[in-house]
Image (cartoon, rainbow, N blue to C red):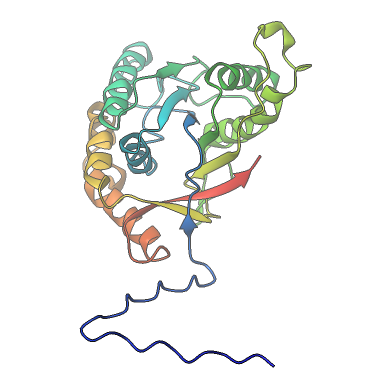
Length: 263
């Protein structure tokens, strides 16, 4: 017969550390950190800054490598600006914004803003980038029909996000897009979807929220183009609210929420 030993009495003057709070149904859990390189694939300049940049900044501080790949230059994103000029302005703003969170590699694919088409051409471009960068984590933007809301998502976000997820498998198949002349890459462990209505994981951005706000504010021409009173132009208010809302499911810590998929 076995017996359970009595609890060890606490030593005088020593207080036991508080137990970690139990994870409750609906809580977000920490995003895995057993990776070194990430490739962020989105449709437009500013997509990453509307939520995910705080996590990117935290990863940069931790010594991880993150590269950005944008399907467009956002040339149709500012109503009062000529598309050709807009593309130049938004590219420059995206590079400045990326640098704020520690990202130096920013590439643009020149698919048409507002008219991105899901299909072999887009998958080919994204698979090529995955083979070049050889990431362990692919970060993309909400590919679902709606935002947490419900608000209808845009065609560009849906097409790019879905193609990014499909391109992970494409990149690992040596028989697909073989003419690229790039070896297959099967090293992607995770796909993290920012802005998803089905978030499961989170990254603590207590130390990087201010950096995230600065990265969105770097898109000054875009924010100004939204017009006075537009809620999306309030970088500080919007990102703080988003971090607090995610934090309600993450132990009260400001956070960026992701839907995590295993690949």
